[in-house]
Each structure stands twice: as C-alpha cells, then as structure tokens.
Length: 385
Image (tube, rainbow, N blue to C red; front, top):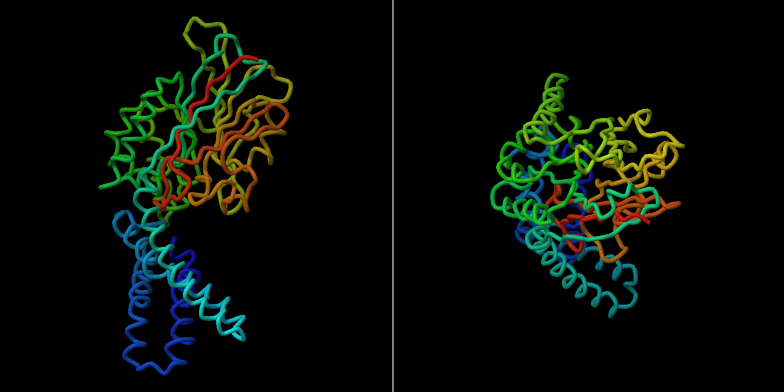
C-alpha cells in the first residue's frame, strides 16, 4: 500500500511539519535545537513509512505494524495537518490580525479533536457491530419464499481480526447465528492479502451456518506477491480455504435454491466475480446470468456496487442485487461520505424500476478505523407482493 502511494504519504507527513517550521519557528527565529526537536516526530514517521514501503505485499502480514503505523499517522500527522489548514486560512486573511490569531487557536482545537476522534475510530468505533433489518416485496417471488430471511454480510477482511480484535469477529459471527436465517450470503473480500489470514480465525468462521459467497477485489492476487507462481498460490489458496470452511463459492456461476428438496418453488442465486472499474479487477461473466425475458426470481451477488448501473440492470433480470466493497466510506455523517464521490450507490438500499440494490457497509476493513459507519450485518426478509 505504502510503496504504491509513497509520494502521497511523504507529502502528508512533510508538508504540515514544514508549514509550522517555516511560518512559526523560522520566522520567530527559534533556536536550531527547538526546530530539530519539532522535526523528530515527522522523521520517525518517515522512517517507518520507508520501512513499510519495503513490504512486498499490499500490507505487512504482521498486523501489529500496520496498526502502529495507523496510530502514528493519527497522533503525529493528522492533528498537525488540521492545524495547518486552519492556520493557512488565517494566513490568507493575515491583514486582519484578529482573524489570524483565531485561526491558530481554532487549528489547535481542531487538531486535538481530530486526534481524539481518530483514536475513537481505531478502537470503539471499529469495534461496533450494527444489525439492520429490512423487508422487500416482489411480485414474482415464489409463494414458498414469502417470509424468507437472508443475512447479508460483506468485506470481513479477516486478517484485521488477529490478536486483540478477534472478539469483534466473534461478535459478528454470533450476531449472524442469532438471526436463524434461511440463507447467509457473503459478498466478497474475505481476506486482506493472503489466505493464511483465514487459518488464524478458522475456529470462529467454522461457527457460521452454511454460506454462499463470491470473490471481491482483495480475494484476488493483486495485493500479494510478485511472481506469477506466488499469485497463483494466493488465488488457489483462497478458494481452498473457503471450501474447507464448507462455503459454496460462486465464481460466475448459478445455483438453484429450494426451501426443501421436495419444493417445486425455487429461486436463482447468481454469483459473479468482481466487476470493478480501474484499478479494480473486472472479471464478471454476464453470459451466465439470466437474460432479459426470464421469469425466475433472481438474487445476484456482486462485490462492486458500481456494476449495478454499468452492467447488471442491462444484462440481467436480477430483482435483488447484494454488494459491498465501499465499506460505507468508514467515515461519515448521514449522507456525507467520501465514497459518494466515486459512486452514488455506496451504502444502503437503492431501487430502479422495481429492482433493488443493497450495499452492505461491511463487517471489517483493511484499515481498522470507523466513525459514524459501524460494521454491518443486514437481515433481509423477502415478501410476496
């Protein structure tokens, strides 16, 4: 992750410290030793950034290092950045001395608030698990499926749940079990980078009822390894791990669901591979999906919700599409979320011509920080209209 965005990370660390050094310490003719002390935290973060950039995978396999780095950014960089933004606004109106002084004071307050919220998002914010309930009515839902209950969960990123965070994953699994649902659907990103992460929490995942799953962008090999052989092992290892869990992994495939083996009524479950826009993989095969004109009630699993308008509405008859990927932005307040800059359908329920898309906010994340967007389990009850 660091090496792919090394310039951005360096600028994020250096610019705030440079601003304070230049506009405060240098202009005020502070002694050299004080300026050196000021730069020490940023130099420490830069050194750690350089070490992280040497990791071949997207993130280190030892979770403690990425967690430590996240805390460094949250405590030593982000508060200074908030101060600098406020200070810069004050500098722009420097002709008003009172405005400039207030900008500095506001910047200090904003920096302290940012640090506090960041620590909260890293601890209690990320540990929160929310269960959402909704009912959806469909005209062509088979009678036997009236009242069918589905648990939708996405983006577990189980590599994040090592060590002291494992109880959060246990809470997610226990919440799913308590729903006593007819089906559990998982819409991708089980791992962060490598399938060995799954082995460490296999005892928890084994407590889940039967799961139908698909692949997300992190379930492919773009985030791990360099050689073709290594990438192949990652891809095959993930599929083998899900098979060992007893999950039904759908990779551009369709299964027929019946409430009982003797039931005449059925619905189709379509699982497509990730259909993302660059830089995310686009591997979905829509030739296997029910074509226009088919009357079978269809639920479609697709990791990336942006595919709904790009392809799913035109190329399938799926009445209900379940997605994840966005994590709901992880930081948000009401409808204010950064993920809305990339796609309008980034969180919650959407409807188009009687067809629905539900975007789950995920029950995990590669970067374990959440504020206003808790981990989510969705319980959907199907009703016949």
